[in-house]
Length: 496
Ligand code: FAD
Image (cartoon, rainbow, N blue to C red; front, side):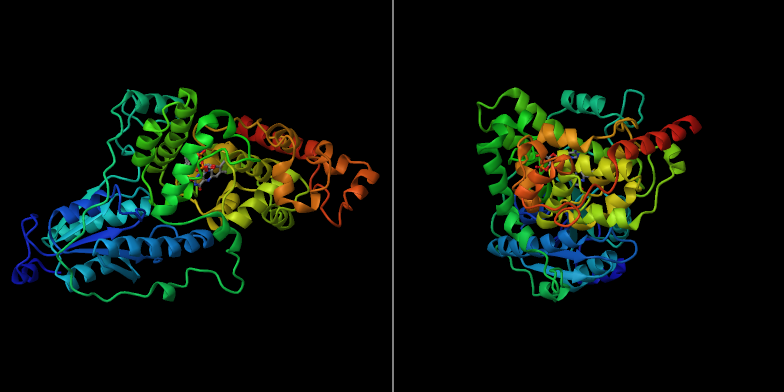
């Protein structure tokens, strides 16, 4: 759009708002509360148009996996209803973001475009270019915070570099300015925007059909802002109180399950920070601090991604480029389907498939199993998680996979190979987690629940299990696989 055309339309050319509509471009911020871009738009007294673009073109951020597409559909339904209550229409478009933002600005004769910042590298690139181009055309553009508590570019070490180790990063944030207070929802808009053309959400076909695998996910989650708040309230009223200990135990609801809500921006870390500061008063400071430290792991992941934009594709530690990863389709498939013969690994992978989420402790176990026991490239695991997790996140997923594989910043040492039997008996002591997700082992006694292959035949037959038929034998021998991984990692270290 040429600046002249704007002048003819009576729009602002000096960057100030002059009464035309404001387009609020929604991305990872599908909420109305603590949404600075939305609130500022409403405060301007102009008609407000909410825009969401499904951009799957080559330059766009990584295409959402299947589980997140399901979530997006439902979250947009919820957002549309919340916006309608504020008298704000939600316009849906699919295609190239830059072109479509401009098209909506043209069609609506908007003067201003507001958005909340996002921090994935393709998103940053698009936003930077678009902001400059719109400003050249005389459109007022503003961006706001919300996705993260700290701008990843602004946290620097004493020497001006970026942090590569979590603990000093946490200390720096903990000693710095506290996060701002969240704001509420904006008031209702009285100034109607004119009707604009919009795609129909159903036409995007975000929901799976043939087969519809989403039943378990739908039973486990309520996408949308109200669902996010219910989840947070339940956590604060329940497991928050014993979070420091409970967070490591997958057999119970010991964590907040805020991750998908954060990934879609249905709630902000500012809101979570504020709520977990004031409610409930009697929570031990250890539980509160431990929880905050996890929120800051998310910040740290974005800090790493900002400084290494190819974090999901390339080893942070280039020495790992020489890693002799194995190609083993059968083993990979067994891992994906939860059929490795190691109950804690299989329970985790089935929890992921059924519910779109996996407990953090078990994520570490299954990721270690893939990269160390099976010596399969962490990128293949990262990609599977990307497709199947409702909380798949460009920063946390990549950073955590690299952490477990040993190739990342501040990584787990190469010789740390999780022993699935010990992990299982320590963190799922009674085997309840395994029994829930691997029902064919449900009748096995606690003694053998993590090691069914060690059970005497009569114990197995009493539990109704024939190994190799009802449940697989281990696909690799633990000791041999461990040694193979150690040898590979040692060679890598010697060559570095
Ligand atoms: P809580 O324990 O309640 O923690 C609260 C919040 O803190 C989480 O919602 C999350 O935003 C953040 N958080 C907690 N642990 C971590 C962590 N280790 N790294 C970064 N942020 C953290 N998390 C994602 O959000 N998306 C991912 O794609 C993702 N992939 C992972 C892959 C692997 C291999 C591993 C080991 C971990 C991954 N994590 C990822 C981190 C962690 O497992 C999840 O954030 C956590 O399980 C979410 O559950 P929760 O909300 O109940 O967590």
